[in-house]
Image (cartoon, rainbow over all chains, first blue to last red):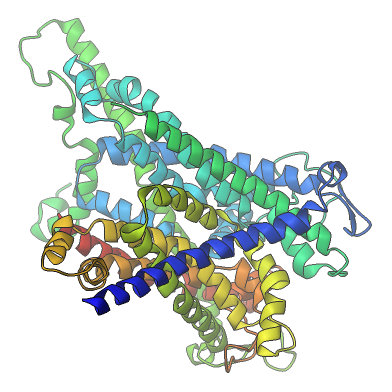
Length: 284
Length: 340
C-alpha cells in the first residue's frame, strides 16, 4: 500500500517537473529576448531605415514589408479559407470526396514551409511572372496559411447550433439565405479570430519568402506590390548569420527579434483572449 | 456520352460521379417546396427556377473553394515533380545515394543526398528523444493531475510556444544555447546536431502536448473509474489504463511532431553549423535537406542541373513528410472510429 503511494508521488512529481521544464524554457526565451532586445528599442530603431551597412539605424522598412506582405496574405487566405470552410461545414456530405478534401487539408498543414517556398518560386515568380515581389511572397504565405484558416473557420461554424439553420429553413429560406442570415453573422467573429492566429504565424515565417521576394537590404520602402521588400524575420536571419560584423550588430538583432516576437505574440494573444471571452459569453 | 454507360468505366470514374454528386446531388432536399405540384402560377415557377439556379451557383462557388485544398496539394507535388524531372534525367539515381553533395565542384559535380538525409533524420530523432517524454509528461499532467484552472492557463501558454517564429528560435539557438552546449561538451562552438535537436524538440512540443492531451481526455471515464474501483491508484490508472487506451492518439502526436521536425528550416539552418560532411555523431555540425535548399537556392543559376537537383531534394522532403503525416492520419482516424 505504502509503495503504491510512493510510486504515485514520484510519478506525479516527474509529470509536474516536465511541465516546469517546458514553462522554464519559454520563460528563458522571452526573458532573454526581452532583456537584451529591450536595450536596442528606441523610437529611432522603429522609425528609421538601417544605415551604414546595417550596423546602425532602425528596422522601419522591415516592419513595413512584413505588414504589407501579411496584408496580401490576409487578402488571399481569409476569403478562401472562409469559403472552403462554409463548403465543408454547410454543404459537404460525408462522401469520399469530402474525406479526401479533409485529408488534403491536414496534409497541407504538414508540408514543410521551405517546400511552399519552392512552389512559390515556380508558380508565382516564374510561371505567373510576378517576379520576386511582395505579391509573390504574400501569395505563397497565403497558401501556407490556408489549411489553418480553413480549420479555424470551420471550428467557428461548428459552434453555431443547428436550430439556427433549421429555423431559417422552416420559414422557407433557401439554404444560402439561411447561411447568409442565420449562420455567418454569428460565425464571422470567430472565423476572423482563428484566421488572425494563422496570419500571425505567416508573419513570422521566413523560409517561404526567402526566394519569393524578401530582400537583403533596401534603403527605400516598396512602392508597389511588384517591388521587393525587407521583412522582419528575414532581417533577423541576416543580422544573426549573414552580416559582416555579426558581434557588433548583436544588439540590433536582439531588437529585431523582440519587435518580431511582440508583433507575432501580440496578434496571437489578442486572438486567444478574444476567443476565450467569446467562448465564455456564448450562451445559446 | 456513351462511354460511361459501360461497366468498367463506371467503376473507374466513381470518383468523378461523386464529384458531380456533391455538386448537384441532394439539391432537391436543400430547396424548400421542391417538387411541389400545387404551385401552378407561371411567374412563381419562373422565380423558383431562378432561385434554384442561384442556389446551385452559390453551392458551386463554395464547392470550388472546397476542393482548393486538393488542387494546391496536387499542384505542389506536380510542380516539384516536373521541376525535379530534369535532375533525375541528368543525374543517375545511384549518384543520389552517395554521401557527397558538391554540385559546384570544378572537377566533377556530385549530388549525393545521403549526408543530408542522415542529418535530417538524426536531428529529428534527437528532437523526438527530448520531446516525447517531456511532451507526454506535460500532456498527462494537464489531463490527470492539474487543477482545471492550471489547465486553462497552461493551454494558451503552450499555444504561445507554438507561435514563436522559427527564426527567433534559431537565433536563440545561436546566442543562448550554442555557448552553453559548447561549454558542456567542450566543443569549439555549439552549432551542431545537439543544438538543432534541442530546438526542434521545443518546436514540436506544442503539437505533441495538445494532441496527446486531447486523446488522453477522450478516453472514456468508465475506463478510469473501473480501474480506480478495483483499487488502482491514480498513477496506476494513468499508466496502465489511460495511456494504453489513448496510445494511438499519442503515437499520432509523435508522428505529427516528427513531421514538423523534418520540415523545419530556419532553426536548423541557423543553429546546426552548416557542415556538408557526413555526420558521425551528435556533436558534429550538420546540414539538413531543408537547410541545404535554403542556402543554395538563392545562389544557384536558374535552370541548371544544380537548380533542378534542389527541387529533387524538395520532392524527397515533400514525400517524407507526406508519408509521416499520412501515417499519423491513419492512426488518428482508426482511433476516432473506435471511440465512436
